[in-house]
Image (tube, helix red, strand yellow):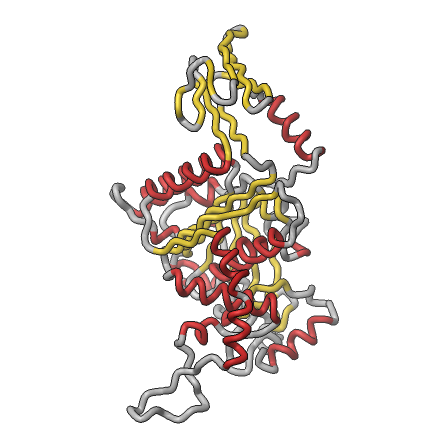
Length: 415
């Protein structure tokens, strides 16, 4: 496929209704970025801010709900989730908590599901230990009513815990690509299908022939009733369903095994190359979660910021390659943690010293920063409400919106 043919094919797909993105679940963000095919995203922050919750909420759970509600049988959505920092049972509890609120409007903290939430109203047990809070009969019934939905979720998103090597991840990506579509590539002489050299007559009675047009070798072939043309050393991926979305989530890239590389940097650079290829070869969408280095909390930097401390591209830990390769780079930031607010306790117009503080002192405000955006505007920040116990990040109204007062009141009431 020549460069112009590739563009014409893209335009024709759009005209024929082929969906190239899942709409951003946070409506006001849609003009800036969406959950698009063949888009490599990098999301980072310091530890404890909620970046994994943001990714799970925005890139996994809300898109899954969108997918569930579609009537179009040509749409296919799934993902591989390498959860290298948390066990799968923890992820299951968090996602169950999120889904209970989404479907039933019932707020059941995930630590209650895990059996790690203390009952602060109960007296100590006979041995002097705090009493663990247990689910009520009503809560158990609500949880059971969501089981089929959760089973469907885990059929769509393959959550794997434990440390992975780059080679293991690369193998899984290729297996997924060949399962969901057909990959063709050429060298200067032969045609390959799913990395296997093809004889002159191959699958589905298709045939291929090689001709020379000037200095360029062109291979023409037929596959499933359609004719295709590839120049030498080019490639083509044809998904079985045209509206196919595959997300590859890594939490977090600093946990990747360094084997067989000599350093963490080399391992992450190799990972970055694999994810870039998954995007470019198969149209998959990698989402890499990354820790920031400690410079963001450096005393000198805080002092020099003069109350305007915000995340930077340079804050990403170990190596800069993912930030360079990614199409979209975002960061979650807690300005309250760094006293990054004005004399009135406001950050970008939001009252974070009072309005978004819970009764027990938990900060419900986060800002999401678009640091890089290859397909849209960047250097944009959004105020978000972070409810960590049910793993939700909800876009806040703009600071001058009257609806904000009701949200402040809801937070003050302990919700």
